[in-house]
Amino acid sequence: MTQQVPQSRLSEDQLLSKIIGMVGKKYDEALEELGHFNLAIFGKTGAGKSTLLNAVFGENVAPSGLGRPVTAGLTFYRKSESSLGIYDSRGFETGESAESLMAELTDIVHQTRQKPLAEHIHVAWYVVRWTDRRMEDGQLELIKHLVSLRLPVIFVLTQVPRKNGQLHPEAVEFAQHIESLGLPITPPRVHFTNAKADAFEGYPVHGLHELLESTFQVAPEAVHAALTAAQQIDLERKRAAARAIVSTAVAAAGVIGASPIPFSDAVLLVPAQVGMIAKIAATYGLNIPSARLGTLAASVVMAGGAAGIGRFAVSGLLKLIPGVGTITGAAISGTTAALLTGAIGRGWMRICEQILASGGTEIQDFDKLKEMFKVEVERDAQEQVTANH
Ligand SMILES: Nc1nc2c(ncn2[C@@H]2O[C@H](COP(=O)(O)OP(=O)(O)O)[C@@H](O)[C@H]2O)c(=O)[nH]1
Ligand SMILES: [Mg+2]
Image (cartoon, rainbow, N blue to C red; front, side, top):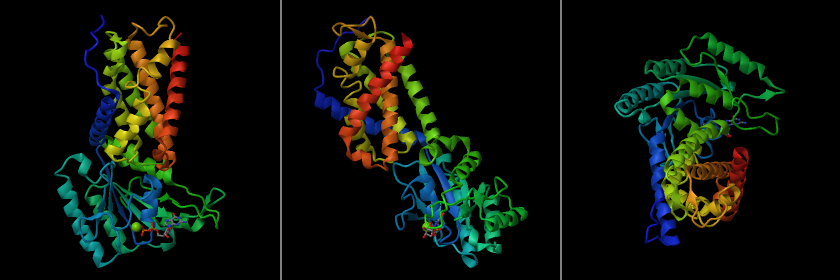
């Protein structure tokens, strides 16, 4: 069964601006669906909290002075397009301020637990610089207090030197001392990190993946997707999540194309592909404002995707598929729709990874991304066709 070709068609420009808006809207929805992972971080000034956060979640997670002070002792950071929330205990020292901080924390934990899970504090990192070499009573009390609020507390020793695969023995000794105190931390061991390489001393960055793994282990399952998007050191987790999104979209495209779409109506695939693209961008944690993502995705992807279907994507692809041959009168079958959607999804994944790896600078260069996307999609489609025939 083929459908009627609609009489009135959108001009290319109208279609593009429609898609820009659609991507932005779907991206907002995807971010909403991802929710938030909220981390509270504690430790003395200079312990390395900001450095650690930036190393795990990307630059400028907690830029000084930009947060919203929720209490005297706690500042909350969350960018509008980010799935990460940070409660930073800036300026926390032991002694009297620890008591008021504990009272403030109790209030916040109780208040946010009235709200959906995406607003709760999910995990606490307790950060101590290894050269402190001792734990004060106020610090131990604060940790116990966090646990009494049912917050999982991960203990992190920071700025720990490592040479030839060996941790500084005195840091190990300090960790053993901390572990011997029987604190209710989860997991019950101390993490060693160095969040910033020291070229002069020759100390590498280390311990961040282990810290992230432990954070996944203690965070509620329902916020794992948000944490996957927020963290910037485990690309494989992002890929796995993005692949799942592509698989779902491919299956949906197969259904859309089950009654063959007239070739000129391949535009019908646009909404499903836009949804896929928006979700992938959210999952990678690109942290781009939605209006900007709309322009980016529309210009990079849709120029070669379903909207520009007559240009390279389908005309190029159909030629590759034996038995389809000519374009006139050809219909997009479920198989072709699925093939196209898969190629677009995987091509867009590459673009997202490129943007992440470049620290966002690639966003300026649409033409380069466009070309890269085109090459990726064609290569992917060719591979699929070869695999199927
Ligand atoms: N080499 C090295 N320096 C660090 C590390 N963490 C923090 N620093 C340095 O220690 C200082 C204080 O770090 P910062 O993250 O601002 O501490 P905060 O007050 O706890 O947020 C800065 O000069 C950082 O560059 C680390 O893991 N390795
Ligand atoms: Mg700081």
